[in-house]
Length: 274
View 1 (cartoon, rainbow, N blue to C red):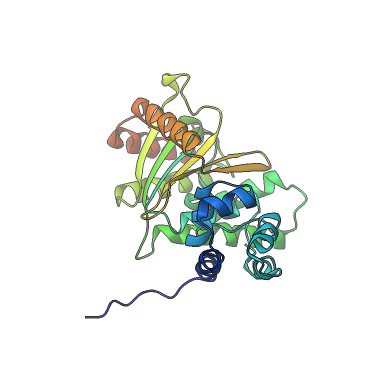
View 2 (view 1 turned 90 degrees about the horizontal axis):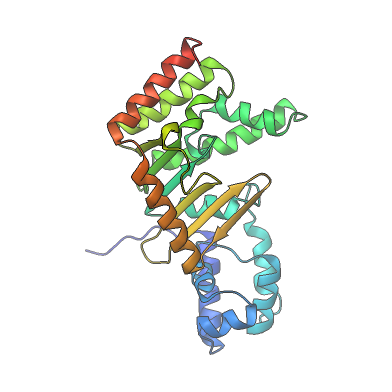
């Protein structure tokens, strides 16, 4: 029986062409990385279609391989519809086999209800028109499709208790949001843990963190803050992030207790008890 493979995405075609042109030019990934001034791991991600080079990187690739602007021009057709600061991380989410996310004060994007997302965007951009808010909400809601696809990653969601307590969008919006998270946990679509206030200081208290692992490529880590985001593929940095996540997870409530706390917080919001 022949194996039916899914069609290559435009990014995968870009990466495949880069690999073929690199080999034809007689470069190893390490040699090309020295010319482009990046890590060999990053070259690997580009060739696997998991990430795209920045325009300056693509320009250096063309110079190194003698491709006359080919990769820089093609790159213009592959621009993401997401905010540049986390567009690459969003694309990687779709290809990961394991995603471990930590949220400090805000529900992670792909778990957000439309109403919660709208309240977040309205707070970030108070002068946005209703149309602009609608576009942002649709874009964010589309990310949630990863939770319901036929081929989806294993998802660990670690929430600081602060995420449960801040009434984003009002009591009912918050109650609906927390019940959605609890429903996903009960259906085993996500593995949910909560870091309670009583833990005090913990290794992840300074940032949102997402760890992503892949079947045939090196893991990456993504941290997010106000108007900025950083995707890390340097092995020592990724390892440090993995260790911090593991340490924080060791202080979290067990799954059943975490679920119970989320349900209780949802009821408190619904009845105006927060």
